[in-house]
Length: 298
Image (tube, rainbow, N blue to C red; front, top):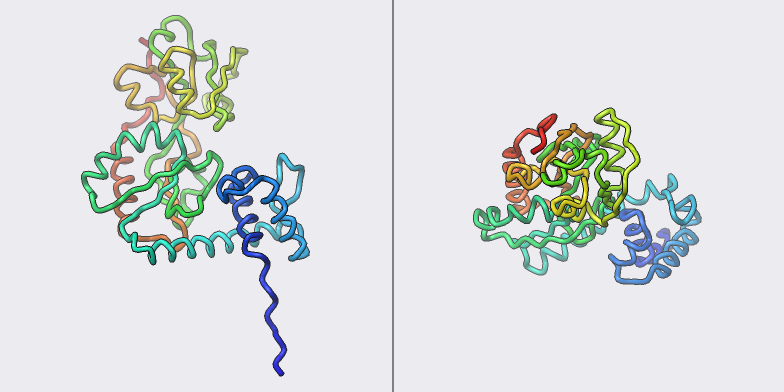
């Protein structure tokens, strides 16, 4: 008799729970993606740790970090699940479907207003957009994600930058006539809470005390700026059209940041529709006007 030399694999559900939690960075986001409860994800990850005999996460519950074992396991699981998703999608016959996850503000303020041009040029591609969490780097079922990406990652395999980024405070012309951006109510996006400190460091200024008004996303803060409620830190590509139209002004200009708008392709997800969409993004991005170092107010 031959001895069984293969060890049983851990539960597939446990592996999926760990991969989703590690990739999204939060138990709640993993639970939403998998359509299960927060506690179910936690139980599955604990069970996986028990099966493997190693810790996969360390630190307090509100700030978990991957252990060396977790960091080793994550990329291989992500690649495997992405390949499964790609295979299922192809078998279903949706060869011309393209599923892309996008950061919310980038989608609302830059991508969607330009999509009519892509659809006119490529009517054969059925583009499906979903929201990418602000800190997530991938999404299950998406062939690619479009997000603001640190400069250090723009040269990684599968990553194609299409616009380099700059940050600056914007406000309505009417509010700019009454006060400057540093002393206006500070519109802060909870999805990008470091926006104001990053810009202040880039500009070499110290932020004075100011009223702070929180908003869930950058595009909400930007809409509040358009309404004259205060000043918001916004990426230049998101604000360029509004500034050109005179609906927003940036009295302190923009400063180059260590990030860019990029498309990240999932392993094994390359396709003709994806190549067309990526080429279109690069061509559109090339038309972005250069950011001004400083703009005068109204």
